[in-house]
Image (cartoon, rainbow, N blue to C red; front, side, top):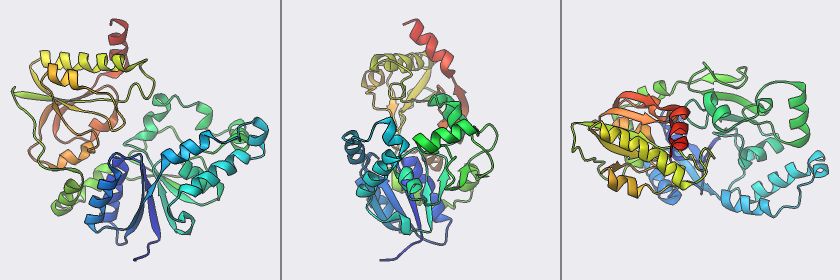
Length: 345
């Protein structure tokens, strides 16, 4: 088996997409660890193997790790002060790792608030951090309600993290560099940041390479029903999972209102759920005759299909629509729009 010096840790389809592009533009093969939390991860592994771009592809069972952590007794303040909690996390994480990642020269992680990153930090393994999603470090503070003390320099922040937890959001001394799409507006210290525009990554792809990527994620032909002359594609967000709504009915209400607005304007509708969105939109799809795009498909992939063209892409706040070439207009409705719907339900 061919050995490599580089390994990427992926927890989403988007992570694997960026990893494929980097592999296409590299002279060496990478090893990859796929989280079992990725939907249909086994089928994805088969597709990634077929590209011939990678060395070994492993699985990591995040669910098993989390279940084991729930049984842990290391929860008291005293234990945290003596770093027992850190050791416990690292030990449990190591148990479920399929390969010795400490042996690799280059380790790439897309999110450092994950047990895999905690494991690296505990063993003082240097690693590269890539933003979790497009422009992640611009919006993560507001979206995930991150405390300012967790991402800004300061003595109190340093002591707190030193005693009680890990340095996340790129603040760990073991983060070599942080790759972002764009520097303007990021919420993290910029001393380790390097800008690698996603547009540049994609623009370097040949038509043959685009086909490799497209065939990795798309099964069969993607079609949508153009009953009307113009089309709007609606991108959902996991509002319930991220605690922006109280229950499933509220989330359905939000996206039904969006669908109603654009259907009423005479648009043919397409729904693209967020990969983490687990809401069943069947009732809305039937009511407004909406076409459906697989939620696991990275939105950027549709740029490689010349038959896709929409007049409008609509979202509440998700940055996924920023990268679309196939939409003439991109509309962010914003949190105020959502709150108005919920207040008047």
